[in-house]
Structure formats: structure tokens, C-alpha cells
Length: 229
Image (cartoon, rainbow, N blue to C red; front, side):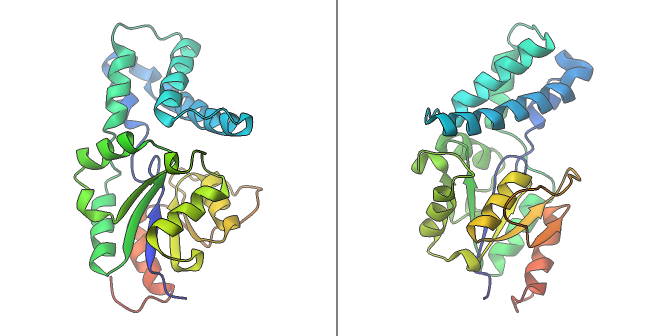
């Protein structure tokens, strides 16, 4: 079945979640990497734990809660740093290959969309800051469903928004748990394994593994889409 749409996870796939801490190296120094990693790990954990407890809070609140945990755990105390990091998170930079990859996909006639745990406001800020607004048909937040990925209802909602079936989609995520969950749901999945992670022991299996989204256009051609990208 031909590919009609490409759906992208946002954080870690399009937007570099480590960029906020990296921009604060003047304060954090060598602790910037550790803060970025712990902040991200706790953020993801909180989405899962809140989903299991049926105590939903949006990702903006969770991002602040997980940052507070990371700062306290690492013993980082600096006036104004928390607000600075949160402000930077609204406008995270994209990975270098993202704009050109999206332009190629759009030029080929494919629908493109974001499917993210982020709030509509968070996603709108990041998309606008990187001037990507014209490159997406839809920006879909889990807040439209009220539960975080990897709940299957989230993936189904994205398909409904775009008017496509699971087998007409390439879903791209750098988060392995997200890639495997989307595969188990029934989507055709490209795991953008930016961080050279090992395969998960979870239901599902990505159809393709790449290290950069720059590899995606030719992968789509090889998968059976006849138009050159």
C-alpha cells in the first residue's frame, strides 16, 4: 500500500530536547548533559505514571515538575535558571536535517503531521520558532484525547485527523518505546535511532531503522512510492 502521510513525534525526533540545557552551559557547565538526560527521563516517566494512575496533567506541567526534580537531584541552584530553562523549552531548536526533509516530503505530495505529548501551545511555539508552520498539514496534541502516548487511542486519533489508514502512514519517532508502540498499533514505523539504542523487548517492531531523518525521503521511495524525492 502506498505511503500517503508521514507523522512525526516532536521531542527528540524533530526538536532537540537537550537544546535548552545546552544553552545554559554558562551556568550549568559540565552538568548540562546530566541535567538534560535526567530532565527528559523523568518527564517521560511522569507521563507514563500519570496515565496509569488516571491522573492526567498536561506536558507543560510535567515538564516543570520533572525539571524541579532534576535540579534538586543534581543540586543545581541558580537564580532565574528554572524560568530560563522553561522558556527555552518552548522554542527548542530542530535537528539540522529536519527543514529540508520536510520540504522534500511536502514537495512529493505527502501529508505531514506532528503527533506529540506536547500541549498545543508548546507545539505551536516550537513550530513557529523554527519557521515550520507551512510544512505540516496538522499538529496533533495528545490533549485532544486526554491521555499520553503510547495509548493506542492517541495513534488512532492522528489517523482520523489526517484521514488515512495505519498502513498508509510512515510514523517517525526517535523514542524507541513510541516507535514500538506505534508498530504494535499497526502503523508502518521508522525508528530514527539518533542515540544508537539497542532494540526494545516490547510488542511491535519498527519496519525501518535510520540514524537521521535525512535518510527518510529515499527510504519512502524504496518502500514503493514511485515519485522521486
